[in-house]
Length: 195
Image (cartoon, rainbow, N blue to C red; front, side, top):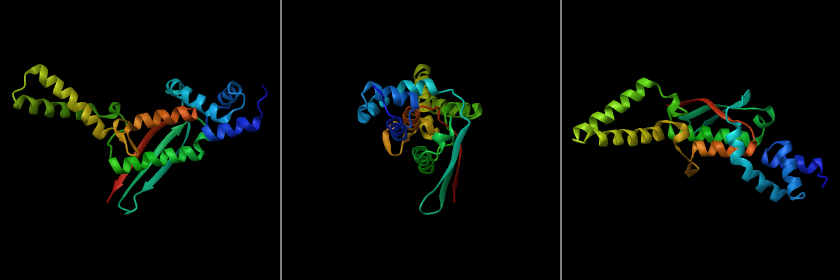
């Protein structure tokens, strides 16, 4: 079946998927845009996994100032192409991340960003507290492990429940967006200000 470039272009604008992916999905569905969108969503998870690690040289810096004017965030988010960086859904994604950071005040993007000295201090405090309660060494280890996971959810952006959909983490939201745009997207850095 011959698919018109107008249909491919429309599907690409609506989904931000790659041109070839759009064309293949439309061919598979004989030109049905809604079914093609569904196919692209199903392929999304696999696409997100493949895109991680790809070089991100484009992007945007987006800010959010809370209505009271006393809290605000600037976030730098990278992607692979200027086409995605200029797209409205990329801007919306970046704004959502800035709003989340403003609301939840994470200190780091991921657990890999936490300095070793901070981790050692946190583990030491948890261990001392558990030992003071008279817990056996094996239980102390499990307590430390469990509380460190809770610590990550408190201080790491990607581990936090996403403010608009608490059943998913910020990492899940990021992966969903990567799948949607068929490009690697990376939250590079942020700064949060509070009066």
